[in-house]
Amino acid sequence: MKRYGLILICIFVSIVSVSGQKGRNNPIIPENLPCIKCHGQAVYTTFSTDAKKHVRQPMETSRIIPEKMYQNAIHGSLKCVDCHAEAYSTVPHPAALKFDTIFSCADCHAGKRKFKKYHLESIMAGYDRSIHAKAMGNTYSCWKCHNPHNFITALSDSLAMKAAITLSNSACLDCHNNAVNYKRVSDKTQVSILKSHDWLIHTELHLKNIRCIDCHTVQTTDSTTAHNIMPAEKSIRECTKCHSQKSILAKNLFRMKKENAGFLNFSNNRIMDYAFIMGANRSITLNIISITLFVIVLLVIFTHMFFLLRYRKQHKNGESK
Amino acid sequence: MENLNKLYPFWLRLWHSVNGILCVILVISGLMMQYASPEWILLSLNKIVFIHNFCGISLIISWIFFIIFNSLTQNGSYYWPKLTIFKESIIELRYYAYGMFKGEAKPFKDDLSRKFNPLQQMAYWSTMYIFAPLMVFTGFIMYNIDRLLTDDKSLLVYQICDFIHICAAFMISIFLVIHLYLAFMEGLNNFKKIIFKSKNYEEHN
Image (cartoon, rainbow over all chains, first blue to last red; front, side, top):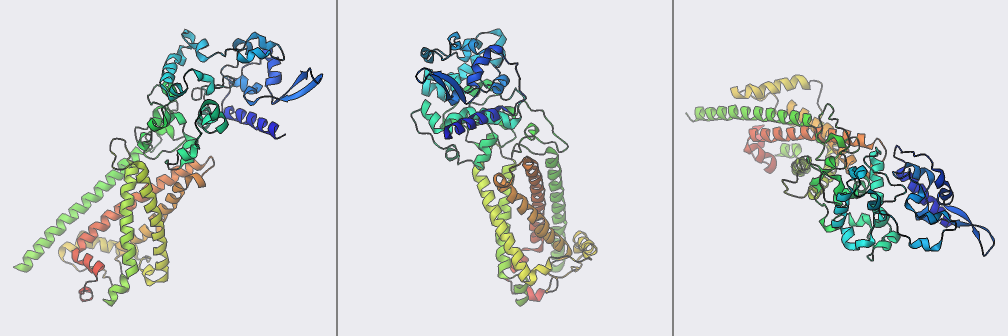
């Protein structure tokens, strides 16, 4: 029972993690229905030749693909056998399929004009320079981070900012905040995310409200470099990279948001519907008013001082005469 | 000497010194946070924020200390303005702008019945009972933002707090500048008198 409970929680989390999106709502593909019948839920029924009866089996978590989630995914218009071998139509699936080659992104997207907008070549180049490529080489694939069955492009799919950040971070946290999954890709011991980021003020606030890749990738205005994940020691540790007028967050994470300076004329205001970042968001109008007032006060003081010193000097001279 | 001790008891001088130092550090560190830039780094932002938070919490303690001692002693009564404060302020303002250059006597002398002139009274009262509490309250909320503000409205609350915090900080900065100038204007002797209990104090009064 406990096991089924866990599986249900995992499905719920998967659905919730993409529920912030507007949704592509691809139509249900009839050819996929037999697959969804088993893979769309946490438990499936199969015929046991030993027991000679139908038995209920739990579906492995990574193979559960809720129908709604798949419909909303970027690949939701594809038939299952477009990517998986035709032999999967046989149930139970032949054991040899376990070692079947899985398609990578490049198999479909690379070198095709239609998919040029995804900049796959530069994504692959970025990835090749990343710590993931260096540490794991060919054993690593796109699917280690991106689930093809629920994959959506976080920022350009008009997700609410919070959902986009949660979705982006879930790709990292699935391993970096999960000791079991981490062990599947690395021999090292997984360190608590909160502990490794405890140098940040308001650690949890930072971790929940910006993407891991905002600090852990090489920052340029080109979003495709987001795949060049840097080693922890080379990641951004300088607070002013975000907490300043030249905040990298305005150029990356919030680049899709519209500017709305408001009557107080805030700098980097495209951030402000979601967050308020000290140093980055500053009212230009208030700045001008405060500096003007301050200068006026100083002018009054210096004028007063000038006349006071002159009066005191005259008074002193008069006394000495 | 006795009057001086009554007007400026030890606890008040101690509080004033601590409060002054904290305010100066808070203003400087606050400006460094507001105008943070990767191009000019004297201290890392982390350290600046730590200093600002530390001094902010110390200022809260200092402010509570001030309020408690003010309510326990006669000192508190000197701050509260009377209804005639605006009329008296114009008289005092005229003295600062004109009268003092003509050798006129101060319109309001400080003694045991009246420690501050009307302008001082207004400035000190608004600083300690309006701007300081606003600073302390909004600063406390922002310091505990991850614990106190967790719902959808928290961003708006944070933005309002930041706005109030910065406006109040600006007013206190202006107060600090004028306060320092007036201290200078009153002369080094007066400064010594307050700090070191000059023997001539009672002769002057």
